[in-house]
Length: 199
Ligand SMILES: Cc1cc2nc3c(=O)[nH]c(=O)nc-3n(C[C@H](O)[C@H](O)[C@H](O)COP(=O)(O)OP(=O)(O)OC[C@H]3O[C@@H](n4cnc5c(N)ncnc54)[C@H](O)[C@@H]3O)c2cc1C
Image 1 (cartoon, rainbow, N blue to C red):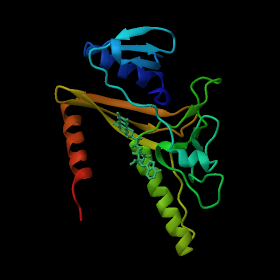
Image 2 (image 1 turned 90 degrees about the vertical axis):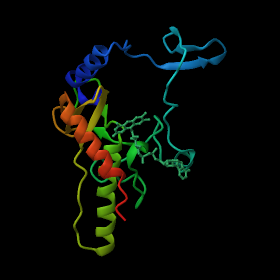
Image 3 (image 1 turned 90 degrees about the horizontal axis):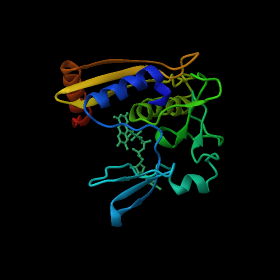
Image 4 (image 1 turned 45 degrees about the vertical axis):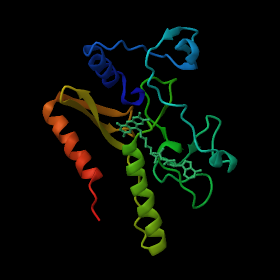
C-alpha cells in the first residue's frame, strides 16, 4: 500500500507476518515455468510453487492505446479533480486512469492514486454528476476529492479498515482501524448492501 504511507504499509506487513505468511518486498514476477513449477523474478531469484495464485499483468484495453489516450507508462492521464482526459468530453475513471498525487513521502518519489474499486466508484459519481450538470446547464460541477477506504479481510472472522484522503498534503493521510470482529461484521453488511438487488 505504497501511497497509504510507510506506517499503514508496515501495519499490513505486520498483519501478514502475524499469520505466519512469509512476505517478500519488491519481488516482481518476470516469468513462470509451469513445467518445473518455478516462478522467476526480475531480480533473478527463483521460487518453487505447488500452487500459484497471482494477478495477470495489469494494463489498459488496447483500444485506449490505439486512441492515443495513454502515457508512456501505459495509463490514461487525467485531471485529478474532473477525470478529464486530453480530449474534450472524454473522461477516464477507475483502473485505466493515471491520477497523479501532489503529496509525497519522499521528494524524489512521485505518487499515483492506487487502483482500487472505491476510487473507481467515487470517480464514476463525480463524472456522472458533471456530465448530467453539463446537459442540464445548471453549473453544479463537483470535484473528486481523493477520499477512499477499504476493508482488509484477515480471516478468523476479523477485518481491518483503512481510510483516508489521498489528495492531502504534504502526503496522503491514511489511518487503519482494527483488526476486530466488529469490523468484519461491518464488511459483511457492506457486501450485502452492495450486492443486494435494489430494483
Ligand atoms: C485480486 C484483486 C483484489 C482486489 N481487492 C480490492 C479491494 O479489496 N478493494 C478495492 O477497492 N479494490 C480492490 N481491487 C481493485 C478493484 O478490483 C479495481 O480497482 C476495480 O475493479 C476497477 O474498476 P474498473 O471499473 O476501473 O475496472 P474493471 O473492474 O477491470 O472493469 C473494466 C471492465 O471493462 C471490460 N472491458 C475491457 N476491455 C473492453 C472493451 N474493449 N470493450 C468493452 N469492455 C471492455 C472488462 O471486461 C471489465 O468488465 C482488487 C483487484 C484485484 C485484482
